Every structure is written in structure tokens, then in C-alpha cells.
Amino acid sequence: QVQLVQSGAEMKKPGASVKVSCKASGYTFVGDGISWVRQAPGQGLEWLGWISPYNGITNYVQKFQGRVTMTTDTSTNTAYMELRGLRSDDTAVYYCARGVRPIDFWGQGTLVTVSS
Amino acid sequence: EMVLTQSPATLSVSPGETVTLSCRASQSVSTNLAWYQHKPGQAPRLLIYGESTRATGIPARFSGSGSGTEFTLTISSLQSEDCAIYYCHQYNNWPSLTFGPGTKVELK
Image (cartoon, rainbow over all chains, first blue to last red; front, side):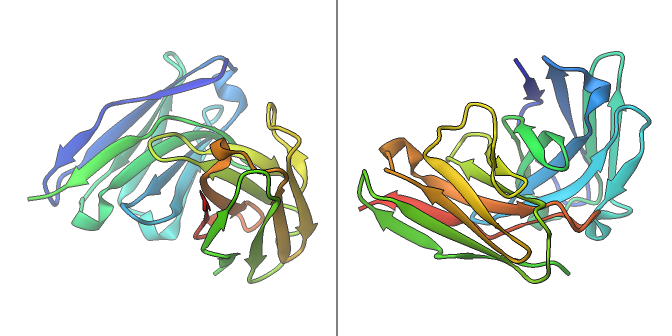
């Protein structure tokens, strides 16, 4: 069955970077894109962007341009999302998810806490 | 910017009732809209996509309808396990995909 297993919770200081991993199994990794979505405490879902593991093409929400980098490693079927220049309002649960139109399967989420 | 509005914000219902959740888009999204169920501490789950297609394994009591700017998710004969937050999501306006603010369904 499809599984997306994400890395564990992270605690970072303002200005630092975080890199979240997402290991996929149960399907052909290069056959579907990987989206990244976050949910801040008490807030709704926010789409950050998408990467194609097939050719590495990315699309980022303008709000995160310059701060986010999404990559994949097809040798290990793992996707990565790095967010730089962390601020307190980046505190959120970050999800990787398969697909984009629509997103059809989600990882369990990674809590990233930004605090001094 | 594409904005999705969901109503009501919260719905208090009794088991066995039929509930109707609404999602309105600020501009047409054609049929490129999905519905997700999200329970605390769990990953969101795809329920409906392409306006009315149920995802794999989703019970028939969940149904979707609508196109353009007005969409509805209906849960027939609500069960206690259906208590969750329901989000609509448009994937028409690439690459600015957006989610609605959610409707919380809770038991009376």
C-alpha cells in the first residue's frame, strides 16, 4: 500500500533552516509529483509547492519563493523540503503528499517548531 | 487570488443525520475541486475529487456535487467516526492551489 513516512519533529531557532524528508513506498515514485502542505496551529491547510520526481521540475507558491527548496532522491524514493530563514510563524505541521491534481495520499506530518 | 469560502464554520449534528457542507470559489474552478477529511493527529484523507468522484475506499455515504464556483459535500446518515474537519481544495488555478478554511463537523 502507498506509504509516505516523514522525518521526526524539529525544533529550530529563528533564522535557522529545516529539512524535512518524506520516504515513499508502495507506488512508482517517479510516476507522481510530491506536494508539500503545512498547517499552522489553529489554522487551515496551506500548499507550499510541488516537485516532479521524474524530472525535478518544481513549482513554489510565490510567498515561499527564495526560502523553500524541494528536492527528490530517486535512488531512495525520498522527497525533501528545506525551508530557510525560519520565523515563528513558520511553526506548523508540514505534510508531504502524493500528487497535485488532486493530492491523493498524505504523509503523517512533521511538526516544526520555531522558537528562540 | 483564488479564495475558497466554506460554510458553515461548524456543524453540530446527531448520528444518522444527513449533513451538507458548502464550498464557494471566488472564480470558476471548473470541476477541479477535492474534499478532504482531517482528524486531529492524523493525515488528511481524500474523499472526493473531480467534483463528484469518490476516492478509493471512501464509503458511499459521502457524495459531492457542483461545478464552477459552488460545490457541496453531503454525508448521509452521519456516523460518529465522521466527526472531523472537512476542507475543500481547488487544483484548477495552477500553480496557486488553495484550500478552504474548513468546516468542523461535531456531534451534538
